[in-house]
Length: 205
Image (cartoon, rainbow, N blue to C red; front, side):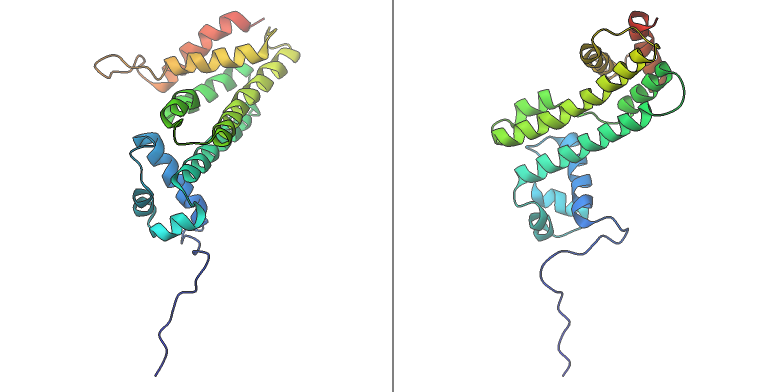
């Protein structure tokens, strides 16, 4: 009698589309956390949406806290890489700022200052510091962009650090909505253009 086939124990398989299972889980988890918040997301929910068993989720991420931190770090790393890619694009610095603004406004945003308040009782100090470090790296990428543009004579910028933070604060205005849920702007392109135009008045030479 032929012995039944048994799946080997240990590491879960790679997803059929080629994305490693751990990365696929992080991608799904990050979307769920950003859409529903930390409290509303369970490991079982992540498993169901990922199309894997709950055991597979726990294999890579032993706790919900670790899954949350890992997924948010992955998002922040991806955002920084995207910022650096857009800053390296050809064209004027103003055009590149508009591209960054459009990309920022097209996707759901995570703001660690607000999110940290909601999850502060769940995460360790080390985990909080890890998230803050990666969020700060976004500002560092923008700070480098403003500093480079100033050195090349495209803008006047005595404080790239402050300017980077001001730029992001202005972008958050583009996310705001009226009480009836209507956007302040008709499109992401309009919001990006107006925000960058306002900033540009203070930094162009």
